[in-house]
Image (cartoon, rainbow, N blue to C red; front, side):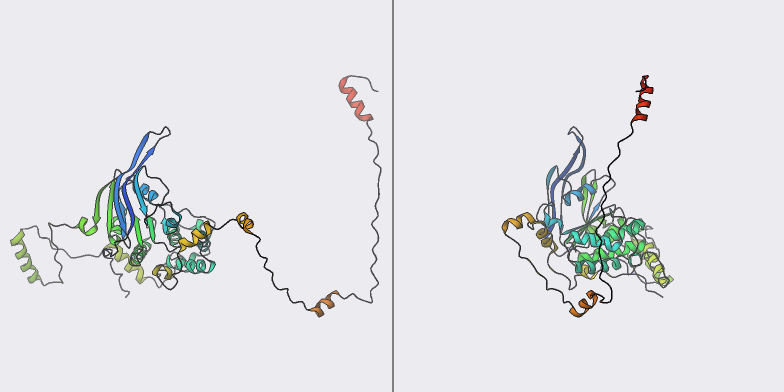
Length: 407
């Protein structure tokens, strides 16, 4: 029998004090056409996110989570307050090169295959062809799309599009990963693998911002959370601080005999009354579902697969090289062709001449001596004098139309 998956436990508190994101008095007010305030989406928000931390953004629809994410990405200007990412503005080129983003809706080119999609995004980060190819293969296998690598993205279900969207968010091996509803549309297998991946990223010192309405997922992976309502933070802190129930105690023990159980209940009820409850522990539905699928994995499937290992470059293998932000900045600041021409001529690069087999060339071009020499006749040119046009019929028709006499 296959082993049941190990339940996820809340991650330990981060050990780094390096502040990756700092928001102070962050406010965003949307205005109408006439410049009048229309909606205060984010209202005087303060929070910090440290390196290696999984930070959750929670709240009902329209509470300001997506607006906060857009300001973290530099897509929106704050109306008031300040936000910094890696100690710089979110609009800084080097800052953007260190961020991976999975939006709530995956905006992908529907006529590209998964490999072509990842190659396109890898090229945006100036990854060389070998790195792009290696990372593409690792990511496709990691998100379970190895059996669908020849299909176009437009044929994918929403869950499969979320998988390739997650892969494109990790192609540059970012230091900050922002995930907006990453498990939307995914099956329980995909949800579990996303959570395992988030924990792996945190262990590597990556910072993860997670916005989700699935509170069970947030509880499994987040170190700290903030809860929005009306654009304001209503609560924030570690999950242990927020979820602790100080007025209750849970006692867990192996299976006891009936007599021992009755004795324990008598002692407890004498102490606290009839509020003591006795019930058997149960596993959650996610673990039960994963156990059933694990036992059935021997059968073939044409859908997304599970149980794939995290890509080597994400786990921090030997591939770690130069910072990709430097590559992007170098490409953006590379002098143009006109500027290069002004500084001086570019030295010519000559390739060695190809080797020619003279004997074969002579054999191919040797004329047949027995054949008579070809004669070329000069082309005959003829010049014809155009005949004058006969206008008599036209004059007759014109006279009839004007009611005149024939000429």
